[in-house]
Image (cartoon, rainbow, N blue to C red):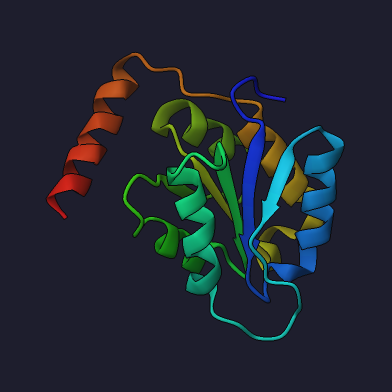
Length: 152
């Protein structure tokens, strides 16, 4: 468990519901507290409805990071990045998941359940959680992103 991450906000839409239970069980087994923002069925629903409260919990400090899952991860990623203070990355491999934490200080991981499947999703989650921001010259770049965000 990464030292700074104890609580994880989680949300998915119907596409992400395919692997929801496996991801949450995996996180709890590793000792994380999970705040589940839904959805709770495979019935068609709208991903922004679930992405927003999950990301607002991260920004408010109720959770240390967020995990969002939809069919491709793309819709959730777009919705998440609309929230001031969120740096969400859609990852389909472990290297990208590790690097977005190390270099971009990402605070939300987005994945596509129809793209990566359950096994790879768990590996991506582990890679994301096993890493943290390295700072250094990457700090300047993350600060530049924050400046762009302030401009709106």
